[in-house]
Picture (cartoon, rainbow, N blue to C red):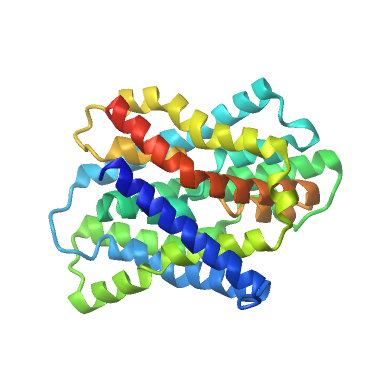
Length: 323
């Protein structure tokens, strides 16, 4: 896919975000309705998109699974370390260091990463990101939740009981169960009936429009001056969307350059440059960190809007670098 096709994809996503924003402003979708849309996305659309990636008949490459897992472990180990360094170097942390650091090391794998990767590279990319999402879940529900919990301890605030421990039930969510099922189907080469595969495909196609409309509704819930008036969110977004993927490029070029799976390197670098994970403010709120939760909400919205520009740029840069 050339750069203009990627730009076209991102403009379509921006239009979907605008539809969500307009629907909220016109009171077509309320915040309560937005929570219902989020539930449909996480429990139906996203799982079906993952399952549709392994429903089409064709050859299965076992090394794709192995290398995707390796890439996931390396990526989601490197991101927190790099985030810690960048926060210290740029000094954007202040009293809310946990918020800025967590926003940097948690990319939006599910809402943005999987649908955009699928639009650019097809079902193989969806499968790669779904496999890596298994590793990401440990980072999200383990490292990030505990990180916010410790920050809450330092500030002597009380959050939801158990946030300082790994929430194992999160590994049994519909999205995770779909990823496990996709792995089993892929590894065991289980044929999926055409009717069932088609159903997965149609329902999974809702993922991109739903995710962007949800972002638009969230954007409409805050004054635009408040959303776009915090200078630190632009610094964080630049680091998250551009600096981090380019900083990790040499490592993954060395690791994946000769793995024999041509699509893997660009997908991994692309994933490293996604906007902030939409669950970040939820984790901060659960720990009782209200200000951190507000900052994370701003960071998610600003980085998501800016990613419409940066994703095509990142695609062009990685293509130029030979990824």
